[in-house]
Image (tube, rainbow, N blue to C red; front, side, top):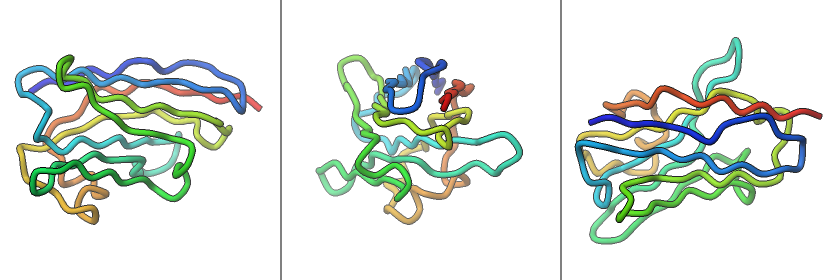
Length: 129
């Protein structure tokens, strides 16, 4: 399984970006997918996740992005997106997408980066003030 993240860049505070994570080697429709970020000098932190649970899709967001970021997926394109609106300078980080081997994560587990088996290479988002 390979993940290719893209869409990062430089944006002013208040602006928007959409990150993409193209997945190959596995169809995503029943996979757990997560977005994490890592700012310089800080640990990797959870941003958002989309999970497959009992025939339905479950979404989860970190409190610091809730209401501003939206995770979605396009099964036909085997791609997961992270729409980021109202960006703040503190959102500056390298953003990573990740997936697992089909563990059917709960919300709590989906926030833990160690639950994921495959990672994209990361895409840099820089928000200027």
